[in-house]
Amino acid sequence: MIEAQTQFVLIGIVILLAVISPGPDFAITTRNSLMYGRCSGLATAIGIAAGVSVHVVYTLFGLGYIMAEAVWLLEVMRYLGAGYLIWLGVSAFLPGKGEGGSKTGLAVSGVAGWTAFKNGFICNALNPKTALFFIALFTQVVDPATPLIIQVLIGVFISVAHFVWFGIVALLLTHPRFNQMFARARVWIERVTGACLVGLGAKLAINA
Image 1 (cartoon, rainbow, N blue to C red):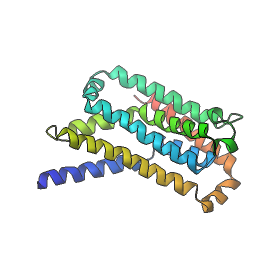
Image 2: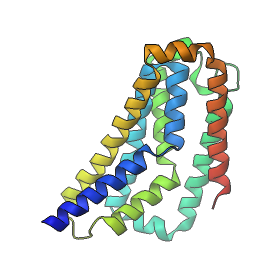
Image 3: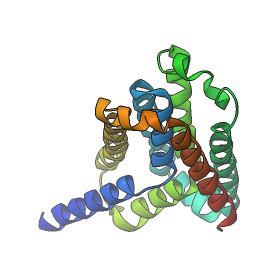
Image 4: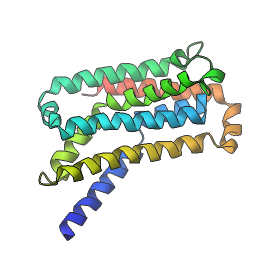
């Protein structure tokens, strides 16, 4: 019993550290929250959580083992994810802000919410580092004898943890006090965030 509790505490710590570590998910949440508002930031957080569920499903079905052996699958994910991040970053420098359309319309339209959701979903689902994290977690940390229902609950916890963390990030970044501060330098913030996304994408593409 004590060993099981220790295992779950270890799993919880590993998951939380992985969730809050800066990366593409944080960058895309920051971008959408600052550029398009709170609803867009929260939609991005939901998309990230949904993207996590993709990794949960294939890991629980045992496909994680196949992906660990088929390196080319991770390579495909790596280049697709890198290309998407670079496109999102470049779009911050383009007239009309790329896929999002106008800033004022994006913050309130239903299409904008779907676009932000899609940003978060694709960003996480195509992140090979997230895939490797799940493969490592469910092969090295989670006991193979752990009942399937418990493994499912662990997966749900990871997804919820992503939503909660990035939802908090979106809420903080769109707080009225911060908004006043960001409004003065919005254009530069957009460009810096876009440059960060391009940098993350390039790093993902170059690093083996």
